[in-house]
Structure formats: structure tokens, C-alpha cells
Image (cartoon, rainbow, N blue to C red):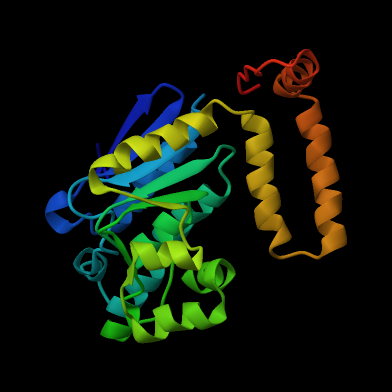
Amino acid sequence: MAGDIRVARDGDVLRITLDRPERLNAAPPAMFDAIRGALTGLGDARAVLLTGEGRAFCSGADVAAVQAAGDAPAATHHALIHHYNPCLQAIADLPVPIVSAVRGAAAGIGCSLALAADFCIASDDAYFLQAFVNIGLVPDGGASWMLPRLIGRARAARMMLLGERVPAATALDWGMIHAVAAPDALDDEAMALAGRLAAGPTVALGLTRRNLAFALDHDYPAAMVREAEAQRSAAATADAREGTAAFLAKRTPRFEGR
């Protein structure tokens, strides 16, 4: 597919695979455009699984591709504003949950991409890296907003100012990711989680993920108002009616994403 990704449906899960294994999935701007296009064309998919082909999830932005566009500072700014950031915003705006499966490197903008998911599962040989300081640049892709909220200011400073690898086990201990899996089990575990989410009450899950993001930047009263509004929307769905009926009948609900 154009943009160096593959997109496929696995039941109700939309699987997006970064597909430049020969470059450790280094991401030119077009790759993030393609990811955004796949998310915009979500259709009736009820969850997303994001992964990388080969030995790495994503080794960061393809610096050569960005700089080939012309003046390096201007080209970098343009790529972020018009390509990378809109893709990450599309993930934030998704109406369904998203899972990332990371093996090998999740570096630079690839780290931001992996951690933008609701759940990040990493193989035990994976690592997360904010490498920008090593080449005289600053973290981007929302890293300065995301990392302090995930792991606290001190650990975020350690990642961003020292530019050292964070192994998967440490990332799990810090609360940065959801789980660690054996390399040969990563795909199955990530797909099982994505499938579980896809079988859930899709509207309620989408509202919940947006409520979480809203609450990070608003006070307690505002969060409760937002919850009440979302609850009104969720309560009007067929899945809420099914969930209530199943609860009263003491059976397992069968949600259809409506």
C-alpha cells in the first residue's frame, strides 16, 4: 500500500502494519499520512491493532526523507505540522480503542506512535527511546505532553534529556506500557487484546477513551460534567440496552458496537 503500510481486517479489528523492515520502519511523512488515511477510513472496524514488520516497530522519522524536502529546519517543521502531528491527533480522536504491538525499537516519533495507543504491548526484547538529544534535536510527536503524564516528570526528563534506551521490562515497571510478552507470543497476545476490545460496547469504549484524555487537562467538576454527558450518549445505545438486559438475566452480554 502507498505510504509503506499494510492494512487488513481481522474480524472486527483493523490491523495496520508499518512495512519498511529494511529501514527498521523509519517513517517518512507519507507513512504517517497513510496511517491517518487508514484510521479515517475505519469503516465498521471496532478496534485497531498497530504493529511493525520485521525487527523493529519504528526506528523514528526517516530523517533523510524529511530533509530531502529542502531546508532542514523548515522541512522538519512542515513535516510535523502537516504530516506526523495530524496522524497522532487522528489516533487521539479515534472512536474505537487502539492497541500497539512493539518489538525491537520504538524510537523518536515511533516511540510517540506506540505510546499513543490505549494499550501498548511490547516483546521482552523491545525498547523505547527518545533519541533526539543525541542528534541535537528536541522530542516531538507529543512526547513532552505524553511522557510526564505516563511516567512522571523525573522519568520523562531522564528519557528526553539523556537519550537512553528504556527496556520493555523497565517501561512496564514505570507504567509506560500495558504488558510484556515473549517475542513469539507478541502478535497473538496483542491480537487477543484487540479482539477483546472489538467485542466490547464500542460507543462506550470510544467515549471512555475521550473522557480520559479530557480529564488530563480539566478539573474534577468539569470531568464529572463530561462523564454525565457521555453517559447520556452511551445509555442511548443498543449495547447499553443489551448490557442491562444481560446483567438482569445474569448472562454474558453480546455487544454489537451500536
